[in-house]
Structures are given as C-alpha cells and as structure tokens.
Amino acid sequence: MTIESSKIMAGIGSILFGTIIGIILVIIGMKGISEHYKDNRIYDGLVKGAILLIISSILSIAGISFLWTGIATIWIGIGLVSLLVSIPCLIIGFILALLAIKYVKDCFHALAERSGENLFNTAGTLIWIGAILTIIGIGFFLIWIGFIIAAIGFFTLKDNTTPPTYSYTPPPPNAQPPPAQPYQTYQSSSASNVKANFCPNCGAAVAPDATFCAHCGKQI
Image (cartoon, rainbow, N blue to C red; front, side, top):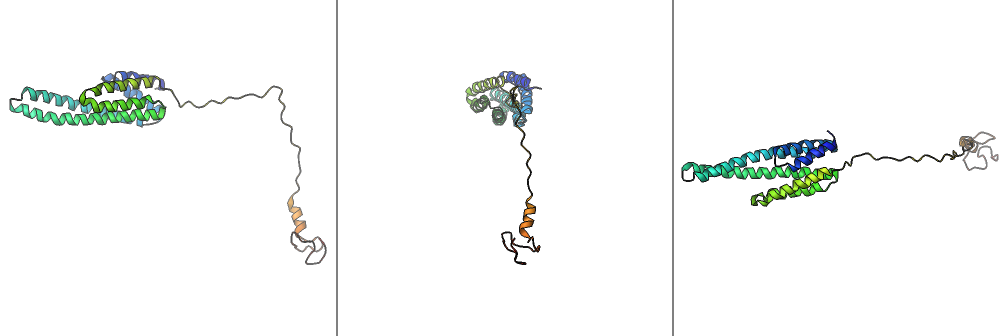
C-alpha cells in the first residue's frame, strides 16, 4: 500500500469515524502510514484505542439499558438492581473511552512529529478535550471537529522522506585539463644522516652537529 492510498483511506475514514466503516478505514490507512514512516507509535496505539472503544461502547450500551430498565421498573425490586448495575457499567465505560481516546491522541501527535503536519497535533488535542467534555454533551461536537481537522491533515499530507536530488553542471566545452605537475625527485635524508652521524675518515660515530671527530680529531 502506497502512502497516497493510505492517507486517502485515513482521510475518508476520519470523516466517517462515527461508523464501523470509518474506524476500519482509519486503521488500515494509519497502518500504511506507520509503515511508510517506520514508526509503530502511529498504528499500535490506534489499535489499542479501537479495542478499548469497542469494549467501552458495549459497557455503555449495557449501562444505558440497565438504567432505562431500572427507571421503568423502579416500583419493583428488579428496578433497583438494574439501577445499581447500570452505574458501574457507565463509569467503567466512560473511563475506557477516555483511555481509548488518549491512545488516539498519542497516535496523532506521533504522526505530527514524523510528518511535520501540525494539523494532527490540533486534531489529537481537540479529540482528547472533546472526550473529557462528552459528559456535558459539547464534547461530541469537539470530537467531530477534531476528526474533520485530521481528515484535512491526511488529504494535505506531504511525503517528506523523498531523498534529496543532486544537480551536475558539466564543464564548458573548451575547458582545458589542468597542467600536469613536473616530476620531482627527492633525495632521501637517510644518506645525509649517515654522513652526518659517522666520521668520513675513521668511521666512528659522532654527534650530528659535531665539526671534529672525537675519535681521530679530523675535521668532518
């Protein structure tokens, strides 16, 4: 899967994120983007968040069902039991939903870090704040805005991993090669060191800076 098809799928999925199809498209698209940037943070956290979100939805639906049953049958004993069961279901479901959205936020922040697209930072932050504020209703609107911004980020995502190109300027047609350097001979310093360290008359070893041989007294 190419980066182009991955970001298109993730963008469409972000627009449809409230549906099963949207969640699946986002997961598949983020998988391809994660492989492109070679960063598992972009995908692994999203899978964990999706699993927790499914569990949270099941608990929330069960809690709401028990709540309505309890309200409808409050006048008999089973109604009180239903109310008592609904409370932990709703609380645990809400906590798991917050944890799921935190994973999603971290995925978007990791993608912003790797791609350099700051829209994903904004989207992740809005989705996280919206999840916290779902208890008063306005949070759902913020979550929707966050995924719309994420969709824009996916559609405008640029591939910043393209290797650099190098230009080559050929030499002018009349350019002449540089002149060859003349061959130079170098006299080895070993011969001079031999002459300076040994007396030419008697062959005795002398100091390098000596002017007379200490053995025979001849001038060097």
